[in-house]
Length: 154
Image 1 (cartoon, rainbow, N blue to C red):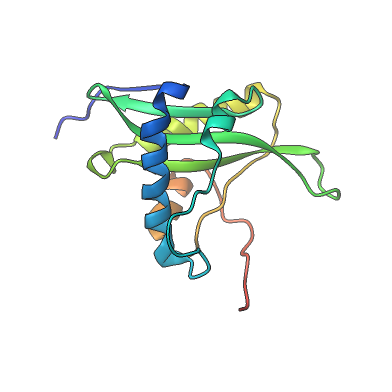
Image 2 (image 1 turned 180 degrees about the vertical axis):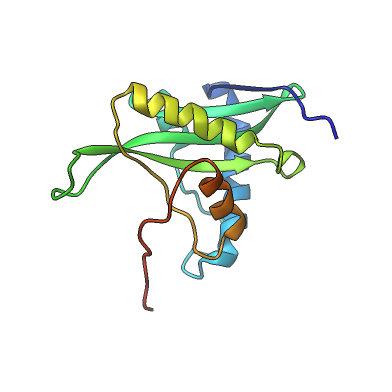
């Protein structure tokens, strides 16, 4: 299998229809891991606002003349007792099914890490469902380490 040439770039408002489709794909992929996600149509993000926010970095990966993956880095306020005030939070990691396993998500994470460090963030975090083993493996492959487990009681 020949890997496609991939271009990682900043998302634009023209990308919004594809990104909204990716968001629904992400939600559908995560529903089996979280019984608390509401039924029916929901949205996780205000993607349009994030694209326009100069403090956020929304990126897409293009291959074969189409958008095949996405991700973002946004600033989040750290807890008052930590040794940093803000950290970069990565999310909206989605890759089209036909392009998974090709290292595209790793390229997106690399770009988001580069941007985060350039912006002065010394800490980068993301969340992933404990049972989403393929995602955990992918994030560990690019340097992330398990840090804390959030538990819930219904």
